[in-house]
Amino acid sequence: MATKRLSRREALIHLGVGAAGLLALPRGAGAATAPESASANTAPEDASGTTAPDLEDLANSIRAASREGAFDVAARAIVNGAGYGDLLGAAFMAGVHDVRPRSVGGKLHCVMMVDSAFQLVEAAPAREAWLAALWSVDDFKRSQERDRQEAGDWVLPPAPAVSFTGPEQARRELVAAMDTWDAERADRAIVGALRSLVNGLLYRRTSISDSEIEVFEHAGELAAELPAGWLRGTEEPAQSESLLRALRGSDAREAQKLVVAAFRDGLGPQTVWDGLRLYASELFHRRPKSAARRHGPVHGVTEVNAFAYVWRTTGEETTKRLMILQAAGWLPLMRHSLDGFFGAQQGPYLDALGAPGEEALPSMEEVFEQPSPAAARSLIDRRPGGAEAFMARLRGHLLERAFQSHQYKYAAAIAEESALVHPRWTSRILAPAVTYTPVPADPETETYERSRLALRKAGVA
Image 1 (cartoon, one colour):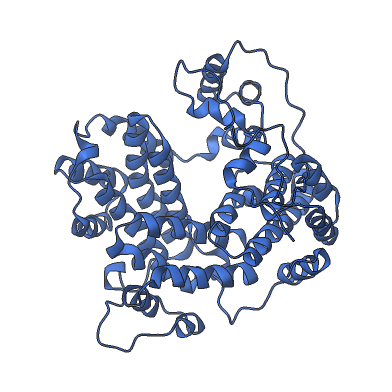
Image 2 (cartoon, helix red, strand yellow):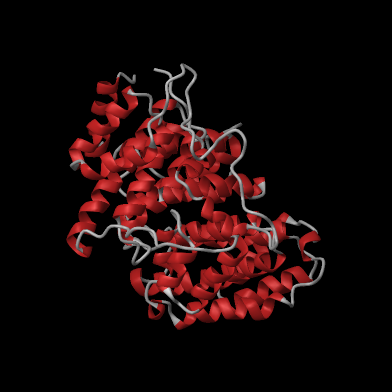
């Protein structure tokens, strides 16, 4: 069956999030327009000429179905020409409209993990991409049921009427509303799919700790202290490890000052970001045994990934300064939080993780059958194409046996970060994953069984 692979960019266009331009539009620029290759009002066609379904209609059908019935909805959509990008987009839209975004975590992970699924399937075989799409549909249904029990069956209210003279006025209104924590005013300024995000961000001003506020404010104070040529410093990969070691015992303010000092010493942003990436990976790697796999503390890795994404994609140097300093200050807060919740960190530091020696090269099967980060590092460093092969195997296990959305978010983050980090550090980002993501010994899930049945009904091999 021929189906169109809907890209993340196209999915966002069809989901109507042109309002995102308010957040990224250069000051004084005109309204953002969709690329010529895709229109928000035109359904895509696959190679056979089949018109893909309207995402809103598909999302509404998924919302109205029972959990088991949602797989039948998906199967019928596939028969009628839907691709896995369409299913992912519909799951995202369903979550935005039917899962209360307060707080942003919890139930709303069904929305937050859709982009992670998109990232993972971009390099995946078609079968794995279908599994990711159906997992997202089922994840929404589980979250929808929790929302009914906990939030009184919340739905996104109708968009408010607005009358702005242009995007610049809407931007100013949104910024003012966010600064004053005015949810209704912000909702008027951000009509579109981003309403759910903004609503969640404005959830309880008191839910943000004093420490988190201090990290942000201190980042703003230190931003001006970065030297004028900080983006053109010298990249010295070995210094990333030195920064990792200095960060271990630091508090938030000290960590931010270490970053300023690194740039003043002439180091480049790749070197500094790699130090932060390594520290995030180490916090995950050294989590105590009480941090069970079902509640793995992945947020050090996923949040640094998010900060780095904003850093790479913004055109504002002020935002770049804030992002790298906030990432530095946030990691010690995460370490303190993990220590309080799970207990003190344990085990060897990341730089002592299975340095390759003369031992026999482990097979890929051995690495996952008896999960060992040290063996994983050895394989990734010593086998040609080891990182790509390792990530492909990890992704395959994940899509058949994932039992929570954090596994998707973490896997997508390390896939991206391992490609961005200097090659000498790639294995240190990937190897700790084997003790958290699914392995062959894990049982196949109910979602996987229902997904296989749905694909058989749809005639997908």
